[in-house]
Amino acid sequence: MPAVPGEDPAAGPLPKEDNFDGRDVDTISLGFVLCMLGVGTCVGVFCMAFTVALLDWCRLHANWQTASSRRLCEVAYSAYLVQGLVLPLIVYGYAEALAALGHPTYFRPGSWASATRLPEAALVLGWLATSTLSVIGCWALGALLRCIPGLSNVL
Image (cartoon, rainbow, N blue to C red):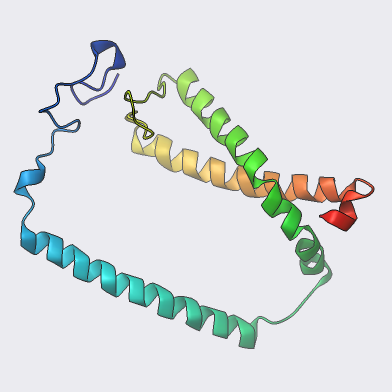
């Protein structure tokens, strides 16, 4: 069961004056907010500069093609299109696996964010599993769909 009081869906909703996770937002100082705003701005600028530098490096040093990369290029659009089919199935499977392990997923009324508390290991392993399976599944399904006569010209 959840570690935070009031997170149990059977207990009903929390009173409006309570925070769900026990943190008090009134104790956050203006200095902290300005510091985080500055850090976020610097990180954003670094992200854009690094992305451009990485693209330029790849243009100069990684501009080559093999038979495998040519095949991946052919399948890339199909893999992109089937993400909407593959990813929900994998996430649903992960949620079912969590429920089978004793961590049922639940949501607060009126919320889109899950209120489920999970151990860190379950989060890390779940991320590894879903990211790996989704990449493999999307590329495999995309390649299979291109094998269907007629779809290879469209996809």
